[in-house]
Amino acid sequence: MGDLLLSAMNSAGAALRAQSIRIRVATENLANSETTSDRPGGAPYTRKTVAFANLWSRRDGGSHVVVRKISEDPSPYRVVRASGHPAADQNGNVLLPNVDPIVEIADLKEANRAYEANLQLLRQARDLINMTFDLLKT
Amino acid sequence: MIDKIVGTAAGALLDGRRIAGPAQAGEGFGAFIADALGSATRLLGDAEAKSGGAMLGGTPAHEAVQALMKADQALQAALAIRDKATSAIQEVSRMSI
Image 1 (cartoon, rainbow over the protein chains, first blue to last red):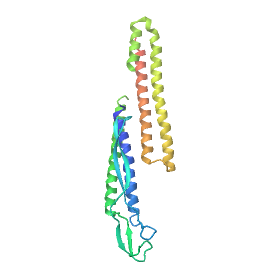
Image 2: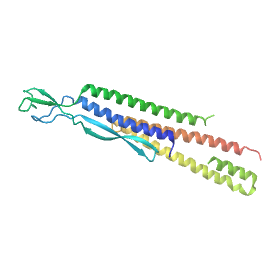
Image 3: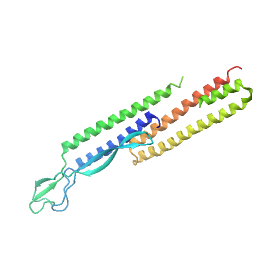
Image 4: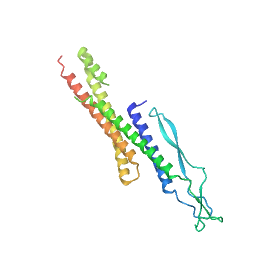
């Protein structure tokens, strides 16, 4: 087991990486919320979801959060009637992505808060370590 | 490590045969400082690589910041311990027999 405060900093760093991936995925979903297929009747952009997992790091003696899998949301696509659209099938229906912008924005806010919380953790651990070594200075 | 230095110096004071003690204490202390500075140098190299990568856009920002923070801490730690150990040795060497 190494230094406990350094181990806390490594855990916070791993969480920063995981939350960054979550922010990226939510941003991709938002950006592609109206992306249809290019073929008639084809599947549009599918909403992506991020699953976290907990890994035990032997070197640090602490657990890190990692992104276990980025998978596709199986919920059904939105169906919109638009006969002139290039992606419309023979019934005139166009499949739109199963992305709800409100949900994505809420997810982005959560990921934002989590990222800032981990930044605060890093700052506190760094300050504590510096204060500990300052005891040696006269 | 510090008890090796103090113990050896105290042994040299109490027992005339152990005048060779301070040389051993010097090796232990020097090896410890060399080891600490070596790991600080390795962390500095890692921090430089990651900050270069962050400026060019490849490395994530938080990784570069973490590497720089670790390198800074390692250097501060090595300097603080070196200063304390050096002043301790000077204090011991000033002890009158």
